[in-house]
Length: 471
Image (tube, rainbow, N blue to C red):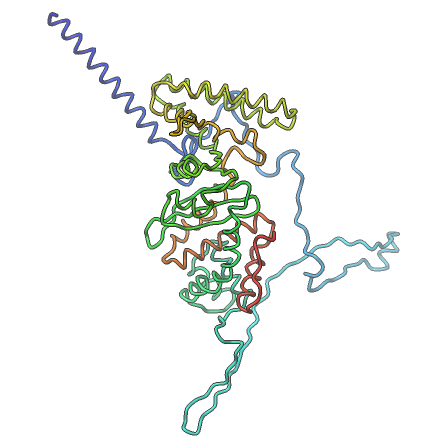
């Protein structure tokens, strides 16, 4: 090989090396640009909103006008019922006007309600305990058993404090300012924290424990988690959802042991999960019938659309196309016969598997493909991992995504960002119970404030606490 050939070979090797570096840089850049639309990252982690797609192509969506859309049924605020009306005035035309215009009075009225806040919407009861002097000069105060151990606020006031703290995401400073400025009742932040972590939290303990015990009895569950802070240290707020209730639990671990504690290793129903390692370990080691979230999977496949490898992009496009066809059939399931529905689902599933199990030689594609592999077991059997993505096709009451659970977690994410977490174990128990009651009451169409008021009233009076399983 002469000098010219050696130079050409060196240049060829240099170009190949540079091309490899360019491809690696493109992949690193694509991963750095990951957001909630093309990965499993939460929307709250987006630094900026992904740009909206514009243009007049067939896939472009028209921007909707503000307000009610065409075809939407108009909804008006309903007036308060008669038992909530304190005063009523009847407005009528004069008899002369009625006669002049030839009108006939009816028994119907147009109702217009005017609502106002009272100057001081509080009721203060003062207990005067007379003091007595003994012959040797000591002071004796009258004992009132009904006041022993009672806070200075009544059940409804305590419920309002709890509502402002947990439902409205108010800080103790904001609540103290509101009570002083609006109600004219001065109170310190420390006492508010003592009330929340004490009596208010304790009033929900029974209802919370009932829901915790009822988790393993449900036919379908969903699980998700998000990080929270306790004294600056990372903790995890776990959320387990059932059709009629939601339970939150704060733990120091994100491992599968938490799921085994909440749901149980012998759970026989279906569990909606995202494809996180702890969830996979829980399902695999306890033989759980998992339904992994397709929303997460689709976002991971969409990342391949920006992959620098041409074969990976083409493979991702084919998977997205099969996914659209699969869900198009699933959304039309009510129009099919039972046999036709099963035949259609099996056909779309098999065509998807035929693609996903033949990935290009690209690590990102191979990682997705591994989720649908057939694994040999130690006893000589085989486990088809793809069934954990396709249970929703044939099992009743199973959804393809874990979106419902993720929506439940949103409230505590907002609370975390505003309040910056907790400082003690009792603060964590308070948040668990309050978030659980808020989410469950919303599911059951119940007033959280009224439930909290009933629970606090029972706690202060020694009565039977209300249940969140009754909804």
